[in-house]
Image (cartoon, rainbow, N blue to C red):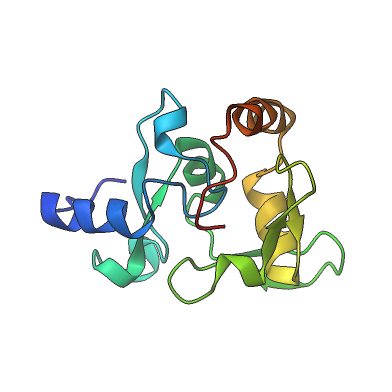
Length: 142
């Protein structure tokens, strides 16, 4: 992200998303990564640097999302909007599997977002299983 985000706005975003990635719900405190403030609607598409257009994203989700707002749904082959963390509820598009390590699909938007952002990549599933054993995952708000 190249746009300057004022410190107070950044703190509001971090608090709103409980210091977790708005997409994969990884807690920043469980990683060595510095999470990023992401423009949901990219600046290149007219997105503003305002609260309702910003979210906290892990570097991997942010990189895979890039400037996309929609992708081809792998099942229907139709153009499908990606999950919007302010306009949509995570629990309406995603849920956790029984062991809490894999994000499961609840909607076409969920399916498209999981695929595009690679939210169930093998390395992340492996580390989620360790976090579950530690009692640190899934996040309390899920």
